[in-house]
Amino acid sequence: MLGNRRILLIISGSVAAYKSLELVRLLRKAGAAVHAVLTAGGARFVTKEALAGITGERVHDDLWAAEAEIGHIRLARQPDLVVVAPASADLLAKMANGLADDLASTILLATRAPVLVAPAMNPAMWEHPATRANMAALRSRGVRVVGPGIGAMAEPESGPGRLAEPAEMFDAIAALLAPAARPLAGKHAIVTSGPTHEPIDPVRYIANRSSGKQGHSIAAALAALGARVTLVAGPVTLPDPPGVTTVHVESARDMLTACEAALPADIAVMAAAVADWRVAHEATQKLKKQPGAAAPTLTMALNPDILATVAAGPQRPRLVIGFAAETQKVVEHAIAKRARKGCDWIVANDVSGGVMGGDSNTVHIVTADGVEDWPEMPKEKVAARLAARIAEALA
Image (cartoon, rainbow, N blue to C red; front, side):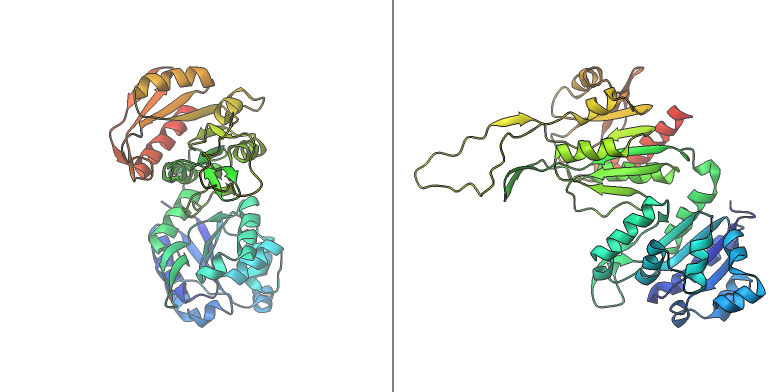
C-alpha cells in the first residue's frame, strides 16, 4: 500500500511516545521507509536504539550533528510526508509561531512536504485557548490532524488529549499517501452540523434536539476521502473531527456568515438543523416571571435560509446537498423541498423517533433521478456511504 513512500517521523515529549514504535511497525509492514527524529523530550520516553532497531535507519536528535552529516534541509525535503506523533503542546506552539530552535522545529519550518500531527497532552493543556489558537493556525495552513482521543491519561484523570492509537494514525497516513483512497483530493467541502441557538434573552434560547453526530460524521468521511473540509458547527458537545477546519457558531445568522466566508467550495452539505425562526427582538435583560401576570408574548422573525442562499449564490458549489428532518410524508416533503431550495440532493429522514441525538439513521436520497431508500445504519456508515456517493458524482 505504501511501497516506496518516505515518511519522516518526529517524536516529541509524551508518555504515550511508546505508541510511535507500533506505528513504525505498521508503516514498515505496509512498505514505507521511515526515518525518525527524536526531540529532547521524546528521548525521555523512547530511546534512539529502540527507534533505530525498528526503523532500520539512523535516528537524528541533534541539529548541529545532523547539519554536519546530512543537513536539516535535506531531511526536510526528502520525505513524502512528515508525521509528528506524539505532538506535544510545546512543539505545536513552535510550529504555529514559526520557531526553529532544535532539529525537529527546524525541519518543520523548512519542509514543503505535507504534515500530519497527532497531538498528545493533558486535557487542560489541549483545551487551553493558546493551544486552540495554535491548532486553528496550523489547520488553516493545511496541517492535517489525527486525534486526540478521549480517555484515561497518565495522570489520574480522563478527557481529550489522548494520543490516537497506532492503527488510527496509520489509517490517516494511508489516506494521505494512497491516491486511490483519496478521490476528493483537491476538493473543498463545506459541511454544517448541529443545532442553532436563537437567543430570547441573556439566559434563554430557542433550539432543537440535534446532536451534530450526522453532520460531524459527514465532515470526517469527506476528509477521509481527501477533501479539504470546513465544518460550520452549531453548539454541540462533540469533539472537532480530525483533519477538518471547524468554525463554531451559535445562531443561524452566524452560520450563514461562516458559510459565505468559507466559499468558494466544490461541495456543500447542509446537515445542520437550523432553527426556522428567532425572536424578533432579543431582550437585553432576563425576562422575569411576575406573580399573576400572563406569559410574555414573543414576536418571531424568519431566520435566513442558508441552504437556499448558498444554492442561489454567485459562488454556488458544484454539488449542494440539503437535509430534511420530517415527521410525516418524509419523501414527499423532501421532493418539494429540493425544488423549493434549488439544491441538487436532499437527504431526508424521519425524526419522529429517537434519530435526533441517536447513533443510527434511516435516510432517503432525493435527486433529479429519483429517490434512493437506504436501510437503517449507524450514522458513521451513512456518512461514509454519502461521501462515496459524492465522490462518484464529482468524478
